[in-house]
Image (cartoon, rainbow, N blue to C red; front, top):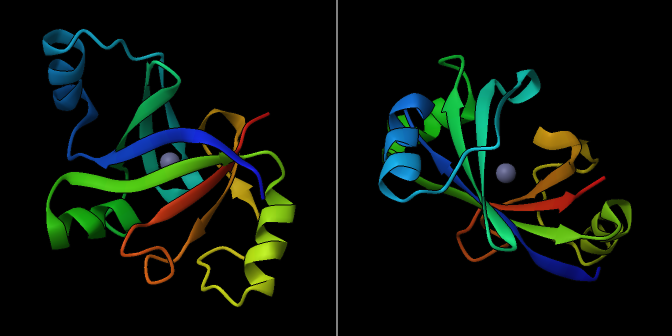
Amino acid sequence: MKPTAIDHIGIAVTSIDEALKFWEQSLGIKCTGVEEVAEQKVKTAFLPLGDTEVELLEATDPESPVAKFIEKKGEGIHHLAIRVQNLEEALEKMKALGLRMIDEKPRYGAGGARIAFVHPRTAGGVLLELSERP
Ligand code: ZN
């Protein structure tokens, strides 16, 4: 599978604009852009930090998984993403091991990445995202 790095940490927020006041103004970590991922009904903002990034996630629809997460648990860490070199290969391997997946096939992620989620029950209670960057 060859995971190479922690790609990013996703944080669910009710408002990216509000959250950026803390991340940019208080911590000095600059946002490189906001993007809407329609398929997941979220708006994302990426803040590079060293070799990894913080991803802020704001729901754009009450049916968004991020809206449901905030409703249940409040704002906070939503997922951990690790970078893989070949997502198809990683998914095949996980399926062969009988691991519980949310995505059986790659889907589009912010920044042109191809991503797939692993079920928290498989990953020690963590929603794990596998991310392959272009
Ligand atoms: Zn993510």
